[in-house]
Length: 202
Image (cartoon, rainbow, N blue to C red; front, side, top):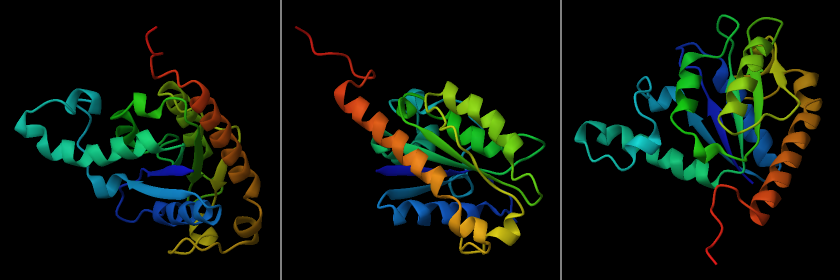
């Protein structure tokens, strides 16, 4: 499977790198192609126009933005699922994450998403995850039932994404098993009948 891993924090001292590296390693161990999409590296402006409005717009003022978004559009079209890595800011998701998500729509349709949330405190970002469930479903990539919260992330993962606790090392299989199931089921369904593509005439 091809999985886009969306990392949404752009803070200078963010811990999301640890979670994103861990997610990529877990997916690769399962034989998937995991591609990191980092909001901090992209430096996207606040949403003015969506990709579908920009892709055929020849206005030179949007040339740089189109160059950033074209590889994402191609990746999302190929993707079988999305893992969203989110911090929690004021009981909500980081604004850069929602901005990253909002640039696209149809590219997400009929593909599952899985939420990995984290915090420096004991709750693991679950309050942000509850808001993300509504957003992700609305844009066409419904979330799997399980969440993967990472409380006390600085103690749970090293800087390179290596698990530092038994829980992180051994007790996350169900989350990725469930994501695998949903990716496989929806990929099979799209192969039989992809609702995004009109049936052939005749």
